[in-house]
Image 1 (tube, one colour):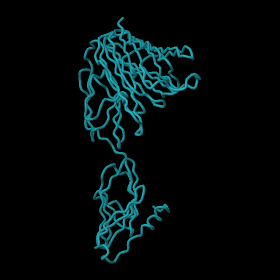
Image 2 (cartoon, rainbow, N blue to C red):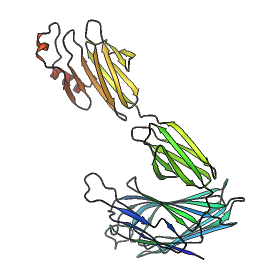
Image 3 (cartoon, rainbow, N blue to C red):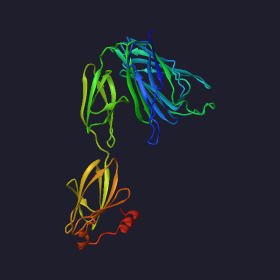
Image 4 (cartoon, one colour):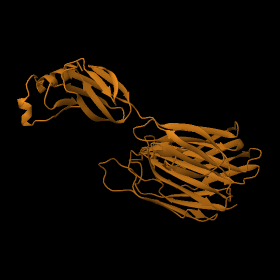
Length: 402
């Protein structure tokens, strides 16, 4: 049996908050190996309290009637608490997974998950556990669905780095820099895709080709309106739209598309071998905001993007994020015109002082009072109006009448 030794000199990269000092880095090489060759992933920096999510895609080409793969020898010096494990096998009929490890200062542990597939898919999970000192040896085996020529296993781990309260000897979550030797056994041709998330951010995503798997995979093209959205396939980050996701095993997959300021788009798709599945022109819906408009005098007409909306005082809701034009008009007064920006979920409040002549100053509030306007000398020569004192504006805002 060929043995593929994967030496992971850390599989994590820390994405700290803005105040963090220092930068983490990760390298993976080589990305194509023959069975038995060593792959090294090098990383620096993993602080206690980091939330970690690790995903493996294990693809076996031409497994025959039965499939089997093992992950053994994982020396894991980092401690993960509140750990969750999940696995999904595709193109299988029966399934059995065994996780076993010897935790320092705790003892031997074993977990067995098994079951039959439904429509070629089987999944199982185990949660609220811990990984300490050693990573479990994993054995995954079963039978292949009739007519299928490959098996895909999606493996996920999640946890938080820190000392285990069940083991008094631990005072921290382990070193910030560490290595994980890992050996995959049981197949000659296929690939493994590693995807690592730290505190919700994708920090590593690489595919390692093992042996010479046949190219019977499919491809996916995705474009969105607007572009520049993040693409996730089965929880793994692939890049931004528009873009191709290549070498996808045939079968059912889950697509998630996200972009800041827009509602996420997700759906299940079916990918066929040798072809291209196209998801073009997906329109992302923005998360709406609102604007409350108070005018002096009141009962003024309000136009949003040249469309009449009603009279003041008025609240405009379900406004898509982006720039919009506002016009407030009342007979006998000069029109008030403004372009404004609505951000994701933002709620604005605007006080408009209408004027019977001269240039138009105004007072606006969005999370505070901002004063803008024209203080040129010609304003002092304009008669027939009284400006609302800013002290009165503050009293109105504080009273909650807006």
